[in-house]
Image (cartoon, rainbow over all chains, first blue to last red):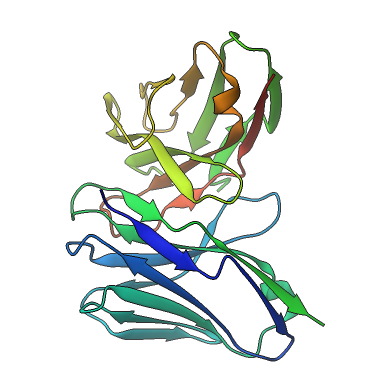
Length: 113
Length: 113
């Protein structure tokens, strides 16, 4: 079945450094790839997304890249700050029109001050 | 707008008991979803609905039931609680297609003993 693998499961970086989280998906029909941030005790919140007709998207300190050939997409956070500490989930849409995502298993990011 | 609200926040059940997790959204979204999140795992889709009166199974529907009598409400029913249903449950909603942002509620932490 469809699957999304996410690495690493935990990531610690010094404040000001960059963080990269990588995901691989299996469904070649996937065409939408959102990234969610989940803070402790809260529900996930969308931080950035990318569609299959775009290779890269940037929003201030965060960026997402997509390689459809390799079925890889990555989240890049630059100039990390303590408030970036959270769990990050990638997701991929399942066959267009099914209204469903497959989520990765999450990456716990710790930004050390 | 309150967004997506869920009640209760926490609940402890005994094996065999039943309960309903409530979910309400005030964004006039057509699509609503129930996920469960187990430690170290991503979100797994339990059930979803594309509109009032229409529901369908997700990846892990066994042991759960849903109904959608109004656009706003999407309750999740556990009939015979089992320890395997110990999890954090999230309700989400979106406007339309699989490429729309899903907005998540704050979650319900359920423990079955």
